[in-house]
Length: 165
Image (cartoon, rainbow, N blue to C red):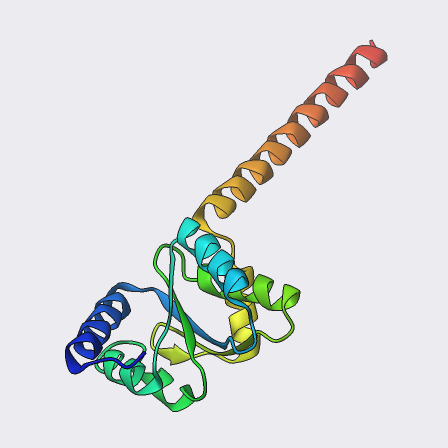
């Protein structure tokens, strides 16, 4: 479907708006992935605050101009599927990483976080980074384990003291 100039301007302005507020962006090559699978990926992304779109390369280049994702322009080629993480920087990377494991034809091509292009290793590290909620849960569990350890130590000391009497 051919886009007229007004539709192209609308697409560029929407992507530019998203680029100004997003925390990170991940790009991928989504060729040869069927529509139903892509729709499921989009649905999963909406649940975790990831905005995704397939955009013509020239429009994407125009849209990310003067944003923290401008450095991504060098990597834009072929069919570009882009995911913007809106709530947690690693959401898009995690979503794409899990999806690429299930779908061999889906290839992560690049990523940007804090104005810096990420290598594939850094994208994996971003994907593995815990969310705020996960970090809080880990902290609570650590504190619980530490307090239980102190309780066990105290009870053990009391038992030894009573045995010595």
